[in-house]
Image (cartoon, rainbow, N blue to C red; front, side, top):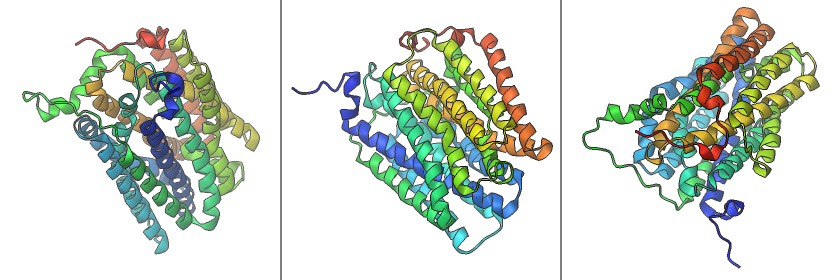
Length: 415
């Protein structure tokens, strides 16, 4: 008997969804391998926490400058082409890192330039790829599709740092070379997708600026979307300890690049365990309260990690951080597409990616700066306390988000 591919349980038999998952897995794996290699490489060259902060800043600046424009492009141009070309540019940035290593360049400013190019590629790839899922599945399949996509992403986040740490035993050249191959694999996977998203038809009376900023305008009208995006920004921005992991690995826990790879993988291990639970049994009620509780748990685990001088306790705290964050990611990643009209999904996703970029890359910069000011351990503890403060404040500022019950009840705001 033929399978009904519109049913949620038959999701993985969709060819284009399989290619999407393959491409996203390869691209994220390459990014994680490169991230571990760059972090260890730059810290060995500089012995400076602030230098690790600049690694995040170099990738964040192009996101700030280009993401809103990239969201408009994602709504008007074939997203398959955007992701394929952007993945090729990511391969070019990894190639630049290979050249810098081959010629034994020690001026880290050139490394920041290569990472800036990588940030440009991510600025265009992220809105196009993240807004692709609703084009590949039905409305009924979307919550489970997002959970499966998130699980695939988290598996690559687990495997990538561990793989990067192992490959780095043979030196940074090997790690950067593996990243090139993985970025090109992502480009090929998206080029083979047959589903062609229908581009939005621009109103002739609408200016380019109005199109680009339409996502921002819509988010301001939707308290649920605004609350979800801004909560992630400030909670993760303050609680970002990942940028400082090379310092913890080398100077506090005394583990090496292999230990750094395990530490980088630990949050994703927690995320995958929780995500498998979500796929099997998605949250049915009190979704908003669940999200806030888990972000609070993220803050507590961050504080425990900052205080720990034991490798296994630190690893456990990072696992809890990843699992708690996964609940927030799932809720946010489901709420935003459900609460956004499809013709605007690329632009709204671009704004979301801008906020995510701020919480990750800018969070790395913030962690590097505060570690330089106060010391590594106090910086992480202060960040965890800040996350708890944000959770309490956002529960008051965004009651609509706090009161979200069933995800199926979320609808776009009427114009």
